[in-house]
Amino acid sequence: MAVAVSYCKSSPFLGQFPSNFGKAQCRHLTGTSVQVPKISALFWGSKKSAAPPQEVDFSLGDFTLTGSTPEGISANEVKSKRISVSVVSSILEVSPNDWDACALDATGPEKYNPFLSHGFLSSLEESNCAVKETGWMPRHMIVKDECENILGVVPLYLKSHSYGEFVFDHSWADAYYNFGARYYPKLQCCVPFTPVTGPRILIRNTSFKDQVFDIMVSALKELAAKSQLSSLHITFPSENEWQKLKEGGFLQRIGMQYHWKNRNYKNFDEFLMDMKQSKRKNIRQERKKISVQNLTMKRLRGYEITARHWDTFYNFYRNTTDNKWGTPYLTREFFHKMGSKMGDQVLLVVAEEGEELVAGALNLIGGDTLFGRLWGCQPRAYYPSLHFEACYYQAIEAAIELNLNTVEAGAQGEHKIQRGYMPVTTYSCHYLINTSFRKAIEDFLVRESTQVRLVTKLLHESGPFKEGIQQIQENEALT
Image (cartoon, rainbow, N blue to C red; front, side, top):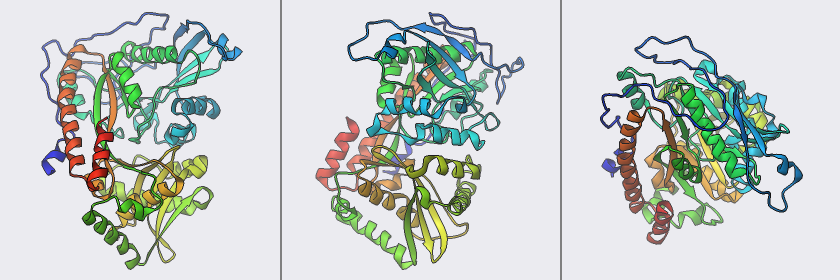
């Protein structure tokens, strides 16, 4: 099993590069668009001399929508024949209502994703987490009709590095650089620092929705090509978008995470009864350790989370980053702003020893999913099994109480399997301008995908659930 798991770790770049690699190549799309000047590298500059960096042109062109209008469509939609595409340098240039309307239409209320909300994304910018100075220059794409109504948005960033993405392309950058070409800057369509699946091209429900999607995809590629960037990456899109983007010339990549599924459980013990006896016993033993250590677990939401909680949790977060990653992506201010804007969508699990907070786990609540994001505890403190309790078991209990279908517990960690979190497939799409480099990456991704699918199958076959439940889990993962 250890051998199988190793396949899913980040791999060195594989593939041979033809001799013409690194030569300038650009695609040109048809339609009305505005020439965008070159953007020079912000990080790891080319071995060749580079011109001074220039800003992009914020207008990406005007487009005409075609087709008849079905019955039941409003008069405003009938007028939405001509649209304009542009980029903005901050999400604050878009009203929360307009952005959130696009996000909600893209997911549907039942699949609402809090990370796509204006509140979450603006918190990252206002707290100086996702800004130019940290290598995340906002370049959000906006589509408007003739009446200035916003029909679509894309969370988009000009990146000067590959950190905080959770889909690893550092070796691609190394290969690019070794051939005398610039990999950075690149365009990244994602939620910064957040490996959560969801739609990335957020479009209002109109009769022209499919046409708007195609125009936005073409505009994204046009922006990357005419800006003379190396590439455009769309990470953790929905599976539906992933399939559509293949038709648009994007390379497909898959990864793996571990999610818990709610099978209409009434309580935690009912979930345990689906587990094999040895796994069920181990979980119960781990949970008993919490009370033995005189720890009290609490789940706090909205107004129950005070400034003191956020300040303390930030210290926990810094303890985790200092020990594990070395560089914190998020600031103290982010937690305060995000907590204020997101309100009851935030679930903070805390562990107390007496009156003292000793650990915490941050979750966000979506339409049908509880998203586990960050964990931390006091420096130099060790509480056996507390990490499992705060991050996994409390999340399961909360999902059952809130009648949510899924718990997403973040990236990596095969130790989650024995606690009921099973492998699922994640997706990313990659558009590379240089055709020689693209071919080498494509060959690598075919081999990588074969490995990931094999590992997913092996992990399901050796999972912690009883035979009947395990077979259902495996069938769901492979369909």
